[in-house]
Length: 245
Ligand code: COA
Ligand code: AMP
Image 1 (cartoon, rainbow, N blue to C red):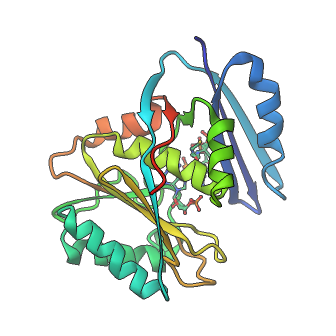
Image 2 (cartoon, protein in one colour; image 1 turned 180 degrees about the vertical axis):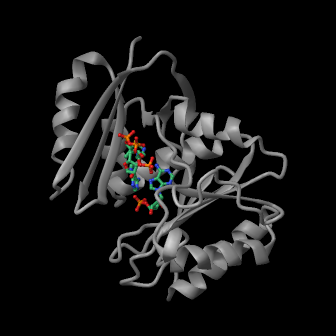
């Protein structure tokens, strides 16, 4: 089967406002291009990239999903930090970088354009600390079906995309966990992906905080060039949805 990667990004006043991607068969290209074109509500620049994929791998199932609600973002982060600690990520390290994300981990306190990579010694490994690394080239094989199930269960399209991204991340043997908060100030739900589970946590950040980002916690001997290559260039289709717990 031949697949095409479709990538859309849009910006307004030089600020990234929307991004999305799909992996589709040729006969679905037109329909999905239109879908992506209509995704941002406003923009002054929009780019759509179409690329034939040379190789594709499959992941059998997405991470399982579990949801948690807390009274406030401090309690929620305490829980997130405990989840990370249970997987061997020292509390001090996760705390430090999580708070950095909440205050702007990029240059001059801006948001990064991708994820931070942190090892168990607490070292940041990104090649460019303002850019970070972006996970791309991942989609669900039967996206419409999975979308329907998730929407029926009360999840959003955001969860669908983030679940795909986190599933590709945790499929790499050196990535132990991912922590994520959105950079949209009114979206306070975040997640910790760890040990096969996408833990959706509300509220993981303070309302009206425009800072957000992702941290990938990795093993100490991670080959950073190979990790970048995996995250940016290897293409995956996820065949099925994990359990909703
Ligand atoms: N945040 C901020 N800026 C971004 C960005 C993002 N998420 N994605 C792209 N940009 C901007 C940056 O300025 C970037 O320059 P940089 O590489 O120096 O940071 C510039 O756009 C070009 O980025 P590039 O990676 O070449 O864009 P692309 O056309 O290949 O599109 C996206 C990439 C937007 C599709 C991808 O980054 C992304 O975020 N995909 C979503 C992943 C996802 O949800 N997958 C699940 C699907 S089911
Ligand atoms: P979002 O989930 O789109 O709200 O993005 C939240 C933060 O995650 C952004 O501010 C970026 O720092 C980071 N990010 C965005 N897209 C990606 C990606 N494809 N891979 C890794 N990190 C990303």
